[in-house]
Image (cartoon, rainbow, N blue to C red; front, side):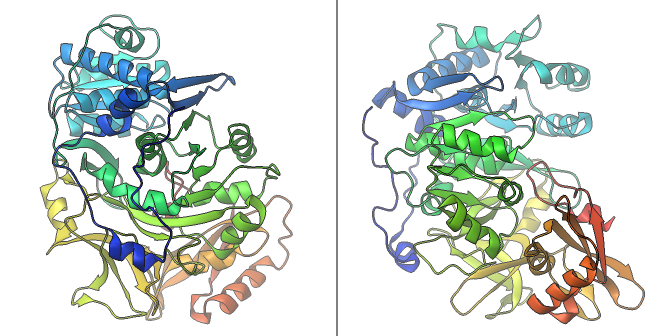
Length: 538
């Protein structure tokens, strides 16, 4: 197997401030994600393994870069024959499967815009995204085809439907298209040309289509390298259980692996099974994984194999507590490195073992290449004060705009800063600690209370598997603190409410003690594993 070309941004280990000081962006004017993640490897090392596909039946198939290029070239030619060209939107309604990445690359070779869609979306969610984006084509599998055909009569822009399953006119066959001999010359694209639209639900209003340029791949790389222990290293293999329809699964693992020439595991699971996840990582000798906090908490309750190959785990989306960090080091034998971002500007803050002092509960420090400020209406806030996380524009990882929503775009970017809507504080060492979404903050008896610290305190109790804290309207205090907890099977509930309240009092503060603790069998979560506090408030 050919040696890896050295694409790394960081050639040596040093302290975090040294890494930030010495880092400079080098974004070329001409840029295409398909070229960086597929075609250049296909030319330099066509037989190099790109994807290891594990199907639900246990089969194992290797996809090499030469195969990816041939398949994506042929599909691009097929899309061209259907009139798909520069700026057109093409939906990718596929599970975690090589076909999804082939489709992304083919779309980008046409200078079109790929639109990843989650396979568990229902009728209304799919219809809205396809209609709002004006998608001209969609690629789906046999399971998704019936849903798309039911929607198609009400989607006049959708003129091309392709399936990886059995096809009958007017539906086209994905397998026939990628087997075609038709050559295709990719259309030229610039770094700021649109590449992908990822819809994010946010907390209010309709979902927003976040339009990203080709450069946003490069914007993810500093955090990817550092959060994964100076990734890549010889023998690295990457995997994530997160669906590739979301920015976490696609850009925190899948695309960077292909960019660096690191074999990527592709596997669709009907639902997350911690024991199956451990088994997969053991069998495939996974060294680097992106695993959301909710999945990590489920895995903590399962026995891991004794000889995993894990070198580092990246995690984000919800706060990690010190208990998970200790479990990673003591049980898994690797660091769990936390990072922060959102669909509009991802992976901009990180907490990483080996290059900084880890502060349990903190998200860490600004990643090299990204400038972060905590601000209120009057400007930057002081040490220890709570402010909104803002990111300096321009930034390669930052979105271009919201699709069809210029007013929302204007509210997001103000005076050279992207406003995240997330609240945090910074300590004397510069470590940033997440507090809440601005609409998750609880106002009680004159105090502004963030739910995260309370949730982390509750999760230190051995019987608490999951916790979510919200405010409930109260005529005297404005709101009271209410905790919803999921307990482990067989937990002793006698006196537990008093115990948990005392735990919060001791670990956080008396004014943060939940007035109510509600036992639940599950908590409402988004498709990416984030707890939906707004649903609990309802």
